[in-house]
Amino acid sequence: MYLYVTVYTKEYGKQELSNYEAIYSRISTFHREDGPALEWSDGTDEWFLDGKSYFKDSYCKMIQEVKDMDIAMRLTDPRKWVREFK
Image 1: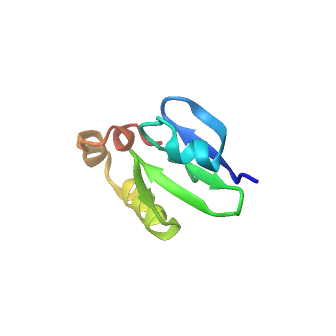
Image 2 (image 1 turned 180 degrees about the vertical axis):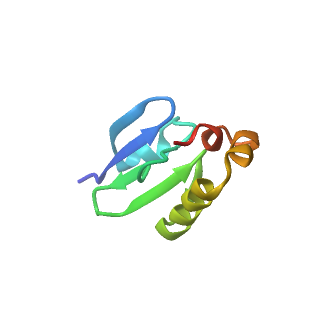
Image 3 (image 1 turned 60 degrees about the vertical axis):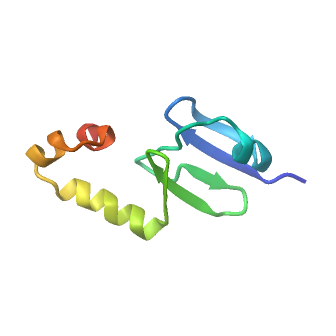
């Protein structure tokens, strides 16, 4: 029996994959700003921003830091997702 995962990526959007497919796929960048990028069938969630993994607490802290930035800081941030964050 395979575990399944819901994957959110920049390239392909939302996909349903088996555990094996998700781990060994050629997806290059896991990314999602409004929720977990990987939702495993066992209830485990993983948050990713530009391919970097975050636990829930550190993800929420990162998003809050972006929300607290003034507009000038956000617009000059080197991370594209921060400049476009709403």
